[in-house]
Image 1 (cartoon, rainbow, N blue to C red):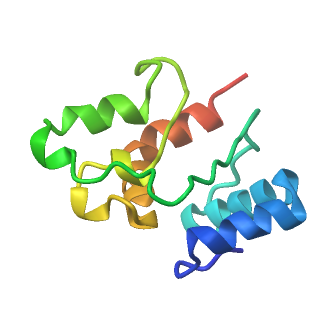
Image 2 (image 1 turned 60 degrees about the horizontal axis):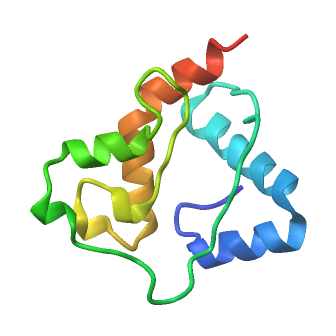
Image 3 (image 1 turned 135 degrees about the vertical axis):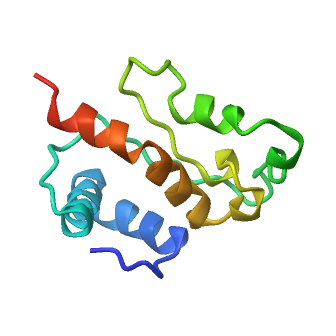
Length: 120
């Protein structure tokens, strides 16, 4: 699995080297070890590596916290589509860092677990 100290670059290299199936297997295994619940694999997943200089940081200081909430579920609260990107985190100190993405995942984790465990 990925350790807490793994960098995004290492994770992206793993995905490129071993493919998305192996990458998702590692992520799902980490989820299981972390929360103690075996979650089903996602129907679809994508990992995007952004070129240097393309991050938009520090916008949160000028926006209400609800902006991050809207971004975390871009299709609305009743559609289980989740987005976690460091630059969309509420805490702008986490923009550009994996902690920002983790912050977003933690914010929606109850809804994410519910969506993954109650789907048909």
